[in-house]
View 1 (cartoon, helix red, strand yellow):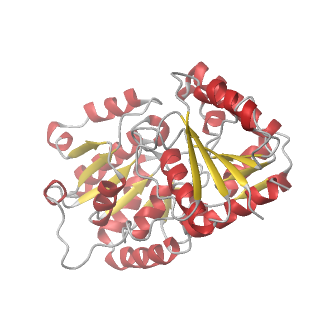
View 2 (cartoon, helix red, strand yellow):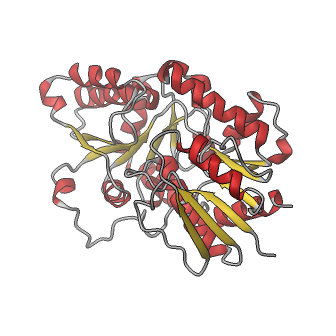
Length: 374
């Protein structure tokens, strides 16, 4: 049976990719790879900003520009024309258009706005609530990226639990790999070794201020020589608190905080390969993709013990109380000083990362789309 599957390509059209953009791009490529028997229409405001490998699949693009509120106005208008010919529509990031086929599947990544409304603002919180309501009232099936996200959907809606499929992300094993013995880091990285690394939006919601405080404890109390590399752009959810934590550092320590800004997937992979430790201490995540990328790169992980992160980490990383800089510092210090423990985490992490594949995620996603099309 060959289906005609509509794909919301708005995320892959964005210039800079973060979590949901990376997910949309890579799940599309792997869907095309594992299910070339189906036909696909990608609806997008402009072409993908990164090359999209469609393989042998039959893929049609519908480029439909619109300045603002593209999903609710422009995509909805297109759905009024196409919804009866599509067997199923796949929305890879939260928000279903007002007009849509009965057979619509949406991926819900996280419900952080329900737990941290103070970081979202009234307008964004309202839109996020609207997106959740649209998903739970109109989707034929929902993909949750973790058991934690599934529990939150059920907590904040009456959606049928039998129609929620938990499909974990994968990790690009070729890109996120350990460094070779003969491999030399680029100059920007070699000049900062040794370093503790994190990646993501720099904001209070991601707990960046506590990580900066933990870095100060490591440097001042334990004389750790490491730099702290904060990769990512300033976030909208509490960057002022990040700046405050940076401003409170003594000048010599402030110089040891490296902020390369937004990093591409390839740049992120190199930073990860040569890091002494990867610290991911966010208080809320739908999945925590960077943890798997660090594990695949052969870098030991210190992670928050909240939301979906223990689900991803398993026994292959060190879980800490993200609300206490002391606890974060203690966790990082154990990795920096206990070589045997660090080596154990590296080995366990590499094995765990191999169990999360995009091929598996794509096959499960296709199964969900086929189920919804019935």
